[in-house]
Length: 111
Length: 113
Image (cartoon, rainbow over all chains, first blue to last red; front, side):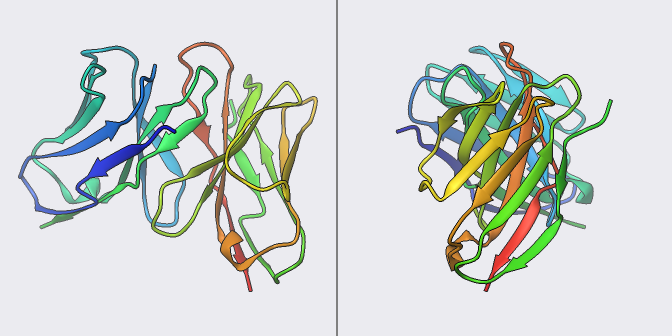
């Protein structure tokens, strides 16, 4: 059974600081996704990582994938309040878009 | 191009009742997946439909069933509702091709009393 673990589950940080969210998964997978969810809202796709060593960046967020270590990271640079949300990583169980999600990391960026 | 839509947005039911949730996939997408997200947890895969056939199922009992229509819209039906069925139900659509991202709808929040 595929398991996906994120840490930390809760993260409170100050504006301007850097931090990293970690996502470990238990079995080989082809694709890893990062999603953002605002309270009471749906999931917004942030990144799709398809191969070992993949790195993608959008604004203050950068995601990377190490398939050998079964680890993905989401790095936040110079955080701003607008980044406050819950971030999920999700792994494809098979080539068919059946995602297994982590528990989510609730990020709060304080002024 | 329209995104994924779901209806209704909110629903209140009592234990033992039945409910039907609806999802319209994004234009050009032929695959619909349903997820259940309990409060404070990550979404859990319920099942997936591809070209009107069920194409994979998660650890959910048979009282969770679904349909996909020729226009690729989909329904999720839940019979004999239980209190633990209270959750946000998310529909996601994608094109079945390799390396395609799933796009999620706004969700239906179901409360079972």
